[in-house]
Amino acid sequence: MRLNKYIAAAGICSRRKADELIAAGNVKVNGAVCRQMGCQVEEGDRVQVNGRTIEAAEKKVYVALNKPAGYVTTLSDEKDRATVADLVADIPQRLFPVGRLDAQTTGLLLMTNDGDLAQHLTHPGHEVYKTYVALVAGVMSDARLAKLRRGVDIGGFVTSPAKATVLKQHPHSALVEISIREGKNRQVRRMFAAVGNRVQALERVAVGNIRLGHLKEGHWRKLSREEVEYLKSL
Ligand code: URA
Image (cartoon, rainbow, N blue to C red; front, side, top):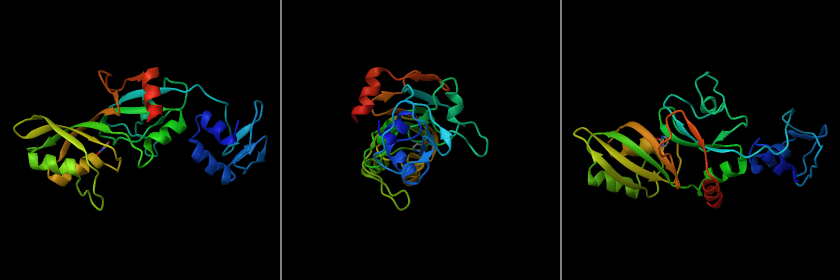
């Protein structure tokens, strides 16, 4: 098997990132640095990445997590805050989050040790629709909704066309469903701020066709085979 594939299959990172690690001289095979892109490894070879010996091809795991507020989307946090990794600690494989949710955002976060799929799904220009339900302050007028759909300037960046519908207008707030394909930092919050509605609570309810459904906060479920096939087909 090619070395980059072996590293990705072990759940360390994507194949592309593995190529970078190889080129940078961070990978050893049987004790010797290997910088060759096409380097082949066989069963029994000892592969080390950044000095750590990696285990061959781990079972691929794909989960949907309902992230509660207050958890950061990293695997380890320098400020020692609670992380999404804590919520999947009962799964033996080391899973990485697919994309990011802000600490205060709740809802659907996909996690996997399939580095190639994670990279593919978050690659700029190839992103799937992600659907959020936002509770926003004030009135969501038709004019504001039209702006969100068309694209708004969130500070040096104009967002691509989005889908947006008002689920409920309360006297002083509105519940709005919005679907976007991009993933700029705090994008949904900045889009609503740009049209004059501050986000009070934000939940992601779907990534493409994968829905959060009735998964309880802080809980995870394995994706079905159909869901995994669907993600790979994107
Ligand atoms: N947009 C946001 O503003 N926050 C998120 O967590 C995700 C999308």
